[in-house]
Image (tube, rainbow, N blue to C red):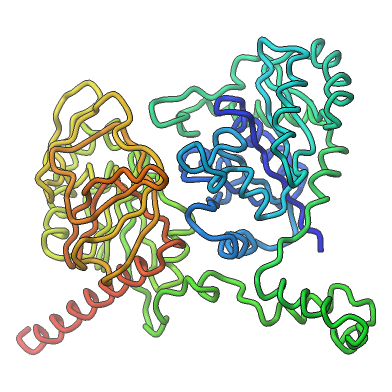
Length: 511
């Protein structure tokens, strides 16, 4: 069964993956295609570009966070009809610690059975590109690399190089991105600028460039060659039918269909397969409540780093997401049962955040008063006593935690992590979480309630502040890899709701 899909990868960071992917997504959408976008690895900013191009959220997929079976199931949650475009991370083969295949763009493409299109920065190169590409082909044991797009190159040179590359590598040259001002998004310490900080014309420009320069006929030929990856139950069913051999029943009786043995047979199999995260092992709590729990979620220019699947899991567990802006809203949402302060760039808005004194007081009172709260990275900084902006000017924050946070001007802790509470407070005993850290800021009080460990190197440290109702620290947790986190958070929200109801019942007779 076909499921049009493609991995956009590159030899290294800075090759133009995000620029090309953004233009491609916008161009496909403008052509009337239904498009689903994904980002390989723990990244928040690149998916914002996808979302800006499509108008619908992009999702993260990662073979370090989830095993092959779960990764396929997460990918298959989006419907089959449409184009499924995955943007890679770093260099094609760069995975955990830079030395492992797990977590790499190539590993994800292998798990999902996706053909790979390489975006190569050709600036300062010519025929040497053939050697570069042949080197990448040498490690492609699954024969996934199918084409190449050259970036930062003139049309004249591309016209001369493309035939040589195709002859020397057998790869299809699908087009190029010219050296033009406005095609490359500027960056800052954590990556590219957010799409909202770029000129309004940026998306339009990259869309028009890709539309004009891409060989669409060959692109769709590669895209449409992708097969739908099989989940465990499907694979077992296929193996069973293959092993039965000549004694297998006729196609008509297996599928109950027309005798073609095609789609109807697959539908009969898929009826028994889980279709959502809540059904395939990431279910968190039973949705027995008559009303959803109200979860206040910070969302504005200062707080925007949150995995789409994390929010989906919270919703499926019974939470209604009520968005608010710590920058501009004077109050928390009414009658909230929990608080989620995600990552972002609060340091760039420290002055404005500090001026919103009423909200800071409400959040301090809510957190210290036991409102179930998760605060990751930027949200953790927001709960500190003081946050210094990049120039070193100090600003008062919520003060629910005692630390002073400042820019260290270099990566403090970077990459994948595994972590667990030393003593079970917020999470059940034995719960192990997977996530990542990536920040230039550090605090005088990082917390010490969790043990954090990096894979491969084994480097470890203590971090995170936890209580019965609070989880606050620099690590970002990927919920599909740790459904118990959602279970615990939502259970605490439900207990909070019940306490409030009991309090109202107690106060009513005295009113």
